[in-house]
Amino acid sequence: MGRLFLIFTLVPLIELALLIKLGQYLGALPTIFLVIITGGIGVFLAKDQGLMVLSKIQYDLQQGILPGDSLLDGLLVLVGSVLLITPGLITDIIGFLLLLPFSRTVVRKFLKIKLRNLIDEGKVNIYLRRF
Image 1 (cartoon, one colour):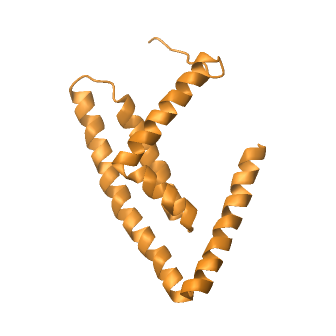
Image 2 (cartoon, rainbow, N blue to C red; image 1 turned 180 degrees about the horizontal axis):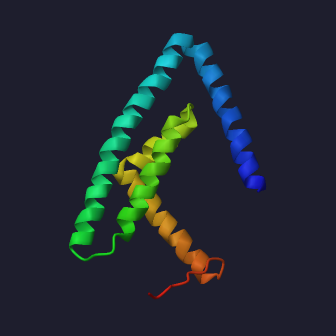
């Protein structure tokens, strides 16, 4: 709970401070345009990558393959898109990294290793339900 509080209070404050500094350096209008442009590029990337991941999931399912990596990619694209909606430089950078396929692959591999370690340590349990 403490981490969430820090994330939801510190990140916006840092983002606000960065935007103010950038506004002092570039001016108000260029800073506003930068936020709008990154948002526009983010919308295009989110749609493009989302459709690409969706088609990969459909292809995997048609081939009888469980789309584990594709589903994780879809989650990362969703998180990246949400971060790009949030105004700020830090969230935009992280959002773009999650939308670009080469950096998303690195994040996906890291998350799979982290999840595997949590399962091995007994901190995450997976229950299978049979139908």
